Image 1 (cartoon, rainbow, N blue to C red):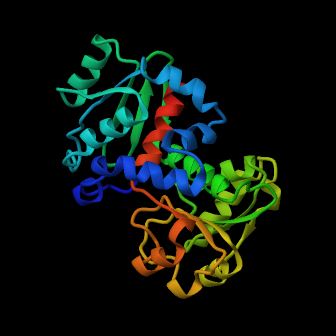
Image 2: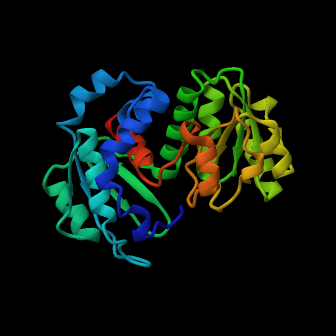
Length: 277
């Protein structure tokens, strides 16, 4: 998991309405709608359930410590989605205990290694990497107006890329993997071979060649400038959960409405729906 900086999240809360409208224009769905699509659930039915589902966001002081405004931003996203969410008054073990004592339905908390949600009623875990990959793959499916039988390049074969690739396979896409560390792509292909369509996965070894050959891209790398400006075509559509974004400012201007990227919002939305289910 990429550790966010305060500057990464400083304006998220104030831009939720705007970003929601942008997503609606690009995909036909809102934050909540994309997350529901990722988990195959009806948005109207989910909306009836969220208000009564209480989530405590617990600060964690371990490791490098608390990122300023992280918990407040996560809670703001959850409330925007309609959930009953609050930031715990206590950190760490005390915050977890308080959530149990106050009969919260779920907890969200993050350290240097994982950002997770814990459903306290059924003891399920929602991992941010898994949820982020899944929900961005769902966003790409919506932008493409159906990704079935389309070739999709997944850049980055870490946990986010793996979850995205699984979701794309389940949507009927033909998945192509690319990672600067070739063994990572080979190992992921092997793990995905058990899924329907997994035996047809292709590995691209040359990044520039790969980007040039595919119109649908899931950019899940933790590196800047993964996709050079000159390789962005007029028909390219990109969902990019990677932090930092692997596309330059100029590249973003070229793509315009054919790019979806955020640093926290969609992943939190996916986690929340996963916990609710």
